[in-house]
Length: 391
Image (cartoon, rainbow, N blue to C red):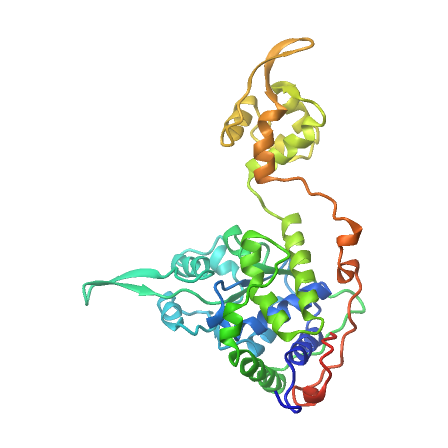
């Protein structure tokens, strides 16, 4: 890389500055995550997983569409799916796929989503390689395998289905508060310089696809979250400067936010509530457990039929985890009830208790110490910038 060529860290700095110029993002970690997600679209052939970017807000005018505009201007080969047929979308995905962009995603996943089953299937399946769609071609009398692997950004009001958000970097947008300002984005004026940085990102990452494909970074999250965040962390490690630490801080923060807002199944929520209801007791009569579950008059367990959660419904839900009531001898006599020990395996598997993180294990960035934001410069202007990675 010559002295006149921007470093990877400088390119990420520039992209992040553009994002925060036009869009008010909910946190510094969200800005870092979106920056890395956009950059990762330029190296899709290197990835084993294609993370989704979910841009959601509780109401209109939260900046969702504006953020999608910036993503469109800076990502690799944007493919907007508005009014596209499923067949056209499927046929547009190749070994070097475009970046799929879906605005108003409630038209695909919401109550008016009839007729979009194929597109929903594509968005669900395309997170992992080697999950092609199978179609029978009557003209050739054979089954075709159609690639589905492609990164995708979806914007909409409210939560997306679990099958999407579980495979996504989720950014929760909100309306601007008084005093928060963003520069107006004009497609004709502003998109061209943004496409310039997209070209620079593509040139930087495409030169090292083999290196990126072989990378095995240390991940701060596990399981599917690790699959989703791995391409972003690899890009950050490749850029260097402060980006590796910031990528991992963003992964931890946004994954924790997703867990806090997890729309888990009613059975998992019941398990968690039972743990609270048991307290230090080793066994509880069914009637006492139900009483404690329904102690909150506005709680979920008062809303299961006219009488709320019943012993029969409780038993049916818990049997899915091999938890069953039995006759137990209590100080005041024998009664049907539940043993705390019978919940231990399900609690450990489905709703493990969160252990406090030792102070010594918290990275400085997680304590709220964030690098300062640079002024917005073009890739050419940043060509001689130091590899500080501040943003």
